[in-house]
Length: 164
Image 1 (cartoon, rainbow, N blue to C red):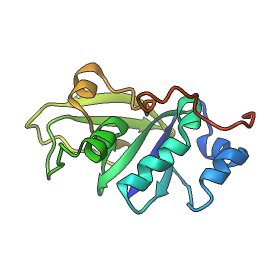
Image 2 (tube, rainbow, N blue to C red):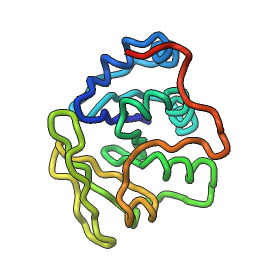
Image 3 (cartoon, rainbow, N blue to C red):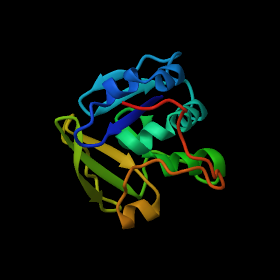
Image 4 (cartoon, one colour):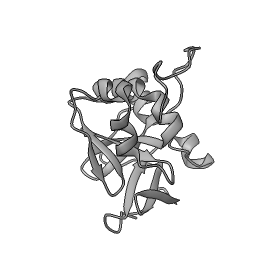
């Protein structure tokens, strides 16, 4: 399974993650790879992917547009949907999903989100687009793709180190 960290516009995300001792420590067992869409990291399981996103949540809030989880080759899940699948265990992802978005990427940044209407066969038109399965709320309200705080967490995310 791959986790795709989407940078905010103007952020050199790969460089930012490697510049910080705190994020380097969180990534010490992984090999981050810079891709045209962001920084991709391969993990073994969804639980490992969610834990990594939680470890990096300060960086997610500061430097990233969001986090996506690859659920099938070329198909990603929003952070919120991944959490619902893993923690709620009420949702079972099948071969198709009703709530889908297409992210258009240019120069390493998401420039547009497009809804895919339920029942439509719209697929990505090349590497400049990412298919994202999301929750119904994200579909109807527009997805910010940003990982949300853990409910009841109450703590600010991130390490004690100054960033930069």
